[in-house]
Amino acid sequence: MSTITITTIQTVLHWENKAANLQMLEEKINQIGQKTEIVVLPEMFSTGFSMKPEILAETMEGDTIAWMKKIAQQKRIVLTGSLIIEDEGHYYNRLVWMLPNGQLGYYDKRHLFAYAGEHEHFAPGHKRLIASVKGWKINLLICYDLRFPVWARQATPLTEEDAAKNEPEYDLMIYVANWPERRNHAWKTLLQARAIENQSFVVGVNRVGKDGNEINHSGDSMVVDPLGEVLYTKANEEDIHTITLHKEKLEEVRHKLPFLEDADNFIIQS
Image 1 (cartoon, rainbow, N blue to C red):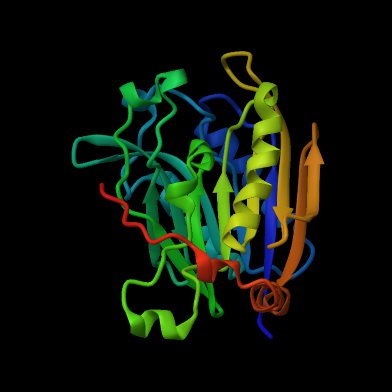
Image 2 (image 1 turned 45 degrees about the vertical axis):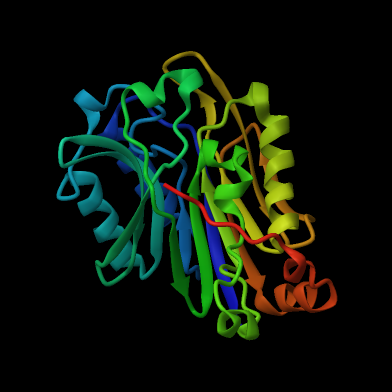
């Protein structure tokens, strides 16, 4: 059965300092001692969770995208995380999925964190991005999206032909985040809930330390299996962790507990 190896990087971020963050992250990526296929960085990894896109935004031809392309190519990895992007006159909290060959996909954060004013500075995304690696289908999401289960829900088959294939829409969810410590109970609980209800592996990568607004982050990055069991977590310190996930485990859970077959049909309207 297929396996996939993922490295999570839980780190302090230098507030609104792109050069310092890229140098620090490159050093951490260089420290990865074992073979890995996907490296996951936190939300807004180049700046921290800043509401100053007018000052900090880059284009898709900017320095951070070029850096991601260089690292992915040198290390022969998929590199992912979100950053502040300007595109056609709008600012986005955009997750970039950079492949070793320089090709990329991206997902714009759908649910903007109004509590912090994110909706006043950024435009929302309207389309999910489900990537594919070695036969694994991967649903890519950002921070506050975690609170909205419909957006993350496995899609129901639209036709009898699709239903006959009996294939869920994805096998793994990845959430990148700047989730504050004071609400870390929700972070940990919801990561497990998303795994259980969607019979999917879930990887959540959060930052640690205080940001420029003196908000503390405890990390609590986590890898969860399709039964909601925690395979890895780390709190209150920087950590680089590599883990291999097994498709056999996923297939076993879905076969023995075919709960997705009883799911409600729905369509998400943008």
